[in-house]
Amino acid sequence: MNTIPPPLRPDPVRLTDHYQEIQASAFRLVLDRLERRGVSVENLARAELRQEVAAAVSATLESASAALNSAERARLIEELLDEILGYGPLEALLNDPTVDDIIVNGAKRVYVERGGVLSRVPIRFRDDAHLMAVIQRIVGPIGRRVDEASPYCDARLPDGSRVNIVVPPIAIDGPALSIRKSRRVMMTVMDLVRRGFAPRDAVDYLARAVRARLNMLIVGGTGSGKTTLLNVLSTFIGPSERLVTIEDAAELQIRQDHVVRLETRPSSADGRPAILARDLMRNALRMRPDRIILGEVRGTEAVEMLQAMSTGHDGSMSTLHANSPRDALARIEMLLAFSGLPIEPRALRRFISSSINIIVEVRRMPDGRRRLTHISEVLGVEDDTYRIQDVFKLTEDDGSINESPRMLRSAYATRLQDVAGIVA
Ligand SMILES: Nc1ncnc2c1ncn2[C@@H]1O[C@H](COP(=O)(O)OP(=O)(O)O)[C@@H](O)[C@H]1O
Ligand SMILES: [Mg+2]
Image 1 (spheres, rainbow, N blue to C red):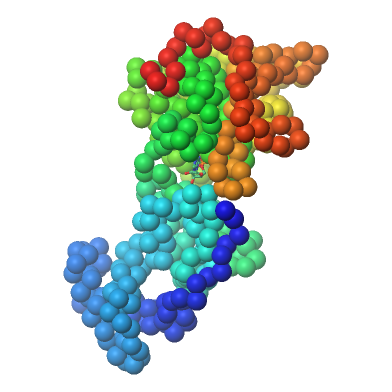
Image 2: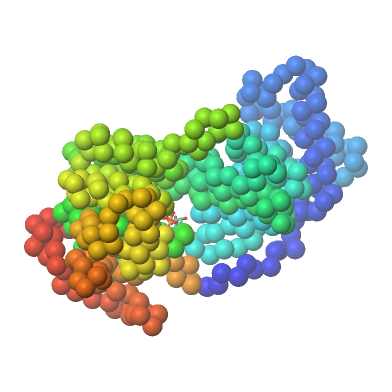
């Protein structure tokens, strides 16, 4: 497998500028005609609109004396409907269940990730202005605009997919967009085992750790599968436990009934203040939750998260961007230092090590597969360094992979024995 995009198929007529111009004129013609009749798009059924579009396509092709075969023509009509009702060229990719991520680098370079492999697709925007129009349509509903004055933005599509946008002058080669699609079908723990994410006994350990209410931090790089693992593991939380979840973009898929979902909010152009993860964490602590699930620790909300873990909300979970379990602890230390917590370094480490019970590391391997690389138990502090015990290790310190890693004896063995594993 490779991650280098294969060359674009010398395919389609619809990649040519000529076709793009025809599409643009048909698009304008439909809108003109509707406007002249005083009809707004929202009041038309898709079937009615399709007829309007088909008529405009015929008229445009005729006046441009262009010929398209019937398949190309049908396709053009669908593209125009997507343009009018949806996110234009992105619609086809958003509706394709095999596509996990969509990456747009300027109007003419569109890539998708399927099953961990990135490839270029024969889809384009007419030009940067067209791409910008789609971008404004994405951010409009959250009350944002993306322009020179605020050239980057995080947004979310109605289906929960996460979008990041960067435009010129920050993005040098034109507007760039990346979409991480929300998975409609959630993976199960057995899917993880089948896909070779981790051996069965390691997954069994994680399931027991959740049931035994160990506090857990899932760490790894961007896109390594942290949130996915968190979602899967949350299925082992008891049905009667009261959960509060906190996140930036509704990515968590917690299937328990007893869950209150909180989401942060960016500040808006008209002066509405931001609501930060830290604000929500403070509030969550007053909501009498059994556990708190923080989608990702990024800032000073780490303080409240660790407080939650050490003050009776056992079994709380979060994710963190870090390269190893030790790196994760160093990052947490840094976040706590930024938070202004008046505590000396030694006590700080004790606080951290007594709050976090296990650190789970996941990694996106060079072939695109996601794998569990570490399960580390945090057991305390000794001589100012953390006492960590790896009970599972896929990669050695030199980076080599041990293809048959064994689970080592856990310091929590007695607690884990008392609860059911993956086959409950
Ligand atoms: N175990 C896995 N097997 C296959 N694909 C996965 C796995 N875990 C995550 N993915 C895919 O990888 C992408 C990133 O996953 P995500 O959990 O959002 O990563 P992170 O939270 O680390 O940024 C998603 O498209 C997701 O569907
Ligand atoms: Mg994530």
